[in-house]
Image (cartoon, rainbow, N blue to C red; front, side):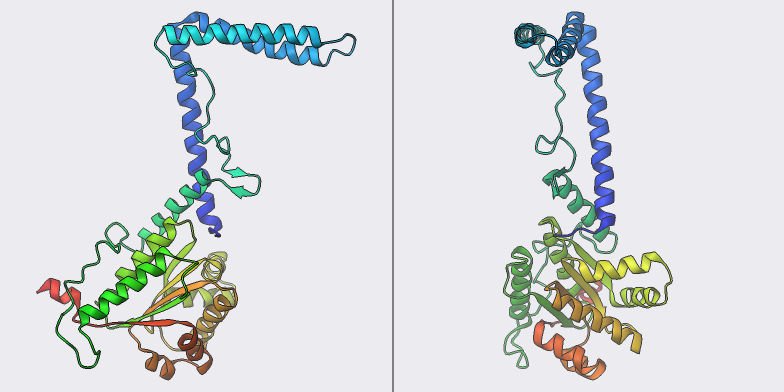
Length: 328
């Protein structure tokens, strides 16, 4: 699982703000307790001085420090016992004056060696979802809120079933794909169908679940990402290069509205690079389009069409435009 550097940066900044706020709160609590029970301030000062004395005794090379260290240790234990009694006596928790991290697993560092701690990875997931929400309505779009009521239950000869039956299967497969991401037998999906049939909705639902599992997800339109490839090729800024790298390296790329772009050698090259690089790197991709696989063969180069047909599971979205149904 590899979050983008931008997501990690924002999550790390949030972790630092949380850590700073927590320390400030601890100082405020400590000041309040010292004000209420002045003897505790004196005890803490004595404990601190005792710890310094232990360190000094340990480095006293002129004498055997063991007796002095043991004496200081006993004094420290007595001070801590008295400290605990006073706290309980005045209605405080016995560890109220202790410095406690928000995350005991990593002491609020966010990392255990080279491994990201769950406290930071949770923030990364939240930041990633926030980024996706700027493009997708992740507030409402989920598998639970995907309604099949908009699809006809009347038998369709061309389908060999009703649109409702077809979309029930599509929804279930998408949900399985998201819930078992990385372990599901199908790695890549091609969502095909006319506008207004739920492709973006289910793409958003997939993005939500996969993001919450801690995987890096990039959602972008074909027009925008192909433009980034062109800008990166001609050296038009670091932002375009970063967008290209994210598209090629993220755990899940959701490429929306393929076919809406102007067909050109540049767009063909960008699409081939995305499809081929991600297949070679065993990265997962979901593509949505108004085109069918037959349209793909007519519009794109054979080496692109061959990879999409051979490596992607096509899911056909059929029915009447849901937006128009709602309007009417």
